[in-house]
Image (cartoon, rainbow, N blue to C red):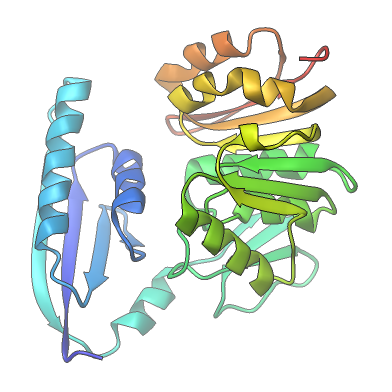
Length: 278
């Protein structure tokens, strides 16, 4: 371990959720979320990361037409016990019946426990889209269901379905996500029926429930593929949708019945039911 590390404190003036999503895609390490923004720590110099955040803020400002400031403070700190402090900052998430906790926390009796190492994967249940999907999984996935998690990331939603007794397939186009999802499932004593690097089109199965927590444009693009893979009467859980793009997604799935909307901040999760054979 080095004698020092770099700490970058990021304080955006608005749109914290979008900055969080950007950092998840940008960083090879985890980061701490605060009320005002984020703290990134690394033994590697973070100057390039700081520049990338500035560029993202400028692009976001052009896209929204809003004034978006971001305060950045990069310092070099003594490497004493920042890992322990980081662990203290990562809190469990309880979304009945699930208890999502970091690996160093004890499971909770009477809950469906899922242990996630934030250093290994970013999907920890804290983001509004993940939390909304967990509520939908709790309500719509039943024991014995066949479930597909499209864009599985850390595998947290797939593992929630497994904890409910479902048979689960999962896929992601990012090889690191597939690797992390496999490792996280093994850590929890769980296993997928099948998991692969690639799109949903690589499956020929039909499912009772399909979960897709991605982004609105991708959900629109793969709409026909998701509907083809769904059993009659099956359920789609669609998330990662900013409220301003909700109508675009609904138009792509207009042949389906809108069963439930789960809204948190500016994010929308849509639960759709297949009315025919797709």
